[in-house]
Length: 220
Image (cartoon, rainbow, N blue to C red):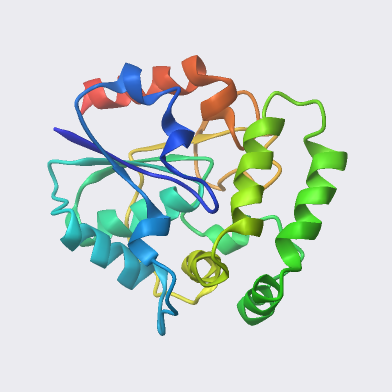
């Protein structure tokens, strides 16, 4: 059985460093930055991006996909394409409805990103108002620094995976994990397993995240 890990917006594989060793099995870590590259992607959305990943990594119904934040949104559509089992951490199956942001327009978000505005200001606001002194402050800074300093077209492509309209699907995550104190995504409307911490609980509270994952793997 393979466990395939998909990180969130601005993150990389290291987001799973505190939980992956305890999960075991054959593990594959996807790097969305590398998959997208630095070129523009016309017509990109989560449906066709997840299909590309499913084909590229030969994901099947025998695999499990664990996704954090945007990675859980991608995992949701991979399940539609492949029938695999998925675990969402701090994610959603209707992500724009749960995404806490004043920017509701993709076109505006892309323009602001290309002009170096949106993540610079968000990073400063969150550092001072929300994450200052919190256990997850450092991982927040690292993540938003990548969004500020990383290739802008690659960041825009990641935003397209979140913002671009996409057809609804009928799929159900095998496990949802979410913190009520998540400052970036509201908790799912559907039933979920509550974990402590915030959006980065898998870094700050790994034991509480690992436990329900192992139970889910064992029971399926």
